[in-house]
Amino acid sequence: DAGVIQSPRHEVTEMGQEVTLRCKPISGHNSLFWYRQTMMRGLELLIYFNNNVPIDDSGMPEDRFSAKMPNASFSTLKIQPSEPRDSAVYFCASRMSGAAQPQHFGDGTRLSIL
Amino acid sequence: AQSVTQLDSQVPVFEEAPVELRCNYSSSVSVYLFWYVQYPNQGLQLLLKYLSGSTLVKGINGFEAEFNKSQTSFHLRKPSVHISDTAEYFCAVMPDNYGQNFVFGPGTRLSVLP
View 1 (cartoon, chains in turn purple, blue):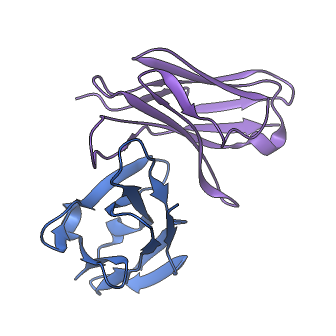
View 2 (cartoon, helix red, strand yellow):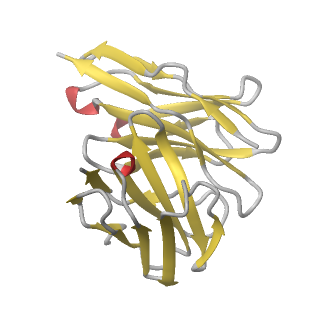
């Protein structure tokens, strides 16, 4: 079975550019999560969706970050304009509804902003 | 609200030695408990989970964890580690009331030395 698919795996871009990260959740999963991982701050939840609706975006750092989920099989996380402090590994995870269902993670996008 | 503490940020251990990675949590409601492993340049993978029943849970790769309700702990153990177990390990809790999120601990880096 295909897991959570993220693209690109690596992204290097210059400060000020727009960055779009993509995620395809596991089919049948109805919750999707975006995380950011850095050495300094560890794993941080940015936003999560239930049935394509954003439920909690309190972890989104600032207005430069936005996330969308236009349908059950696709989500994007966009940073505009990007800054060097946005450099991190960004993970997408999905899970089925129901008690105690685990989250399943993609392999992440390693983002470097120069 | 829930919180997860992993007291040891780094644990070095020699190959074939036993290891215990500690996890404590706080919560005002019942929780489900999880351990995830993250190998270099990969996403988090589920090792094991505790939902109910027997307090000793067995997972993949020879790991097991024991739930202790009175001590609010969920420590991870392996009787004999391999070099390939070198990774970051995350404890996580999920409240048993529907709609709530996972809360991840800060992680413990296990280094298995030859």
